[in-house]
Image 1 (cartoon, rainbow, N blue to C red):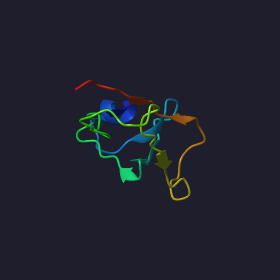
Image 2 (image 1 turned 90 degrees about the vertical axis):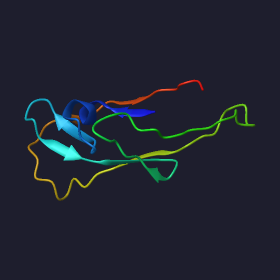
Image 3 (image 1 turned 135 degrees about the horizontal axis):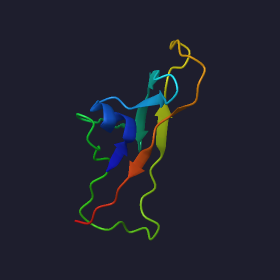
Length: 91
C-alpha cells in the first residue's frame, strides 16, 4: 500500500505538494514499477499484490517515480511537501 498525506487530508485522488505557509498546491503523479498509482478518495493505493514469496532473497525491486509540471503552475515562492508512506501487509 502507498499513502499520500496530502491526498488523504484532502480526500483527493490526486496527490499534491502543498505549502504550509501559502496553502498553494502543486499536483503530481506517481508511478510504481512503471504503473501509474491511483488514489481513490484519498485512501492509500494498492501498488503490489503478490500471493507468494519472490525467489530473490532481496525481494522484487520496483522504481518509484514522482513527476510534476512546475513550469505551468504559478505558485508563490515557498517550500512544498507531501509525505508518502509505504505499508507492508501480510497475506
